[in-house]
Image (cartoon, rainbow, N blue to C red; front, side, top):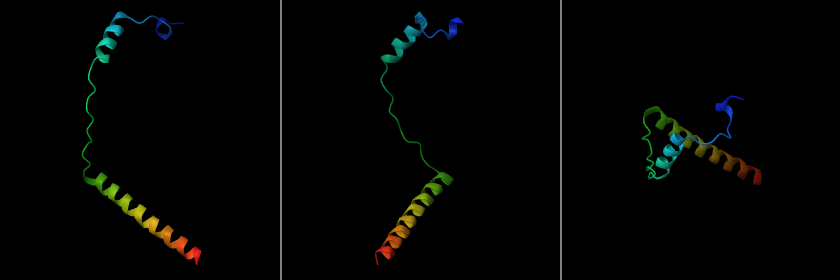
Length: 66
């Protein structure tokens, strides 16, 4: 087996130094990306489609109850 393929190998000093540095960092705040253009139109279209489908299901259910 090639040494790089042996996952049981000891951690290198470089990796341990990197890990120590990463562990002590503060987490970064996540922000939302602005939604623009065609993507915003697609999202609004999906919302409208869902509302129309819910109305159609409600009408179908009401007709089935009569």
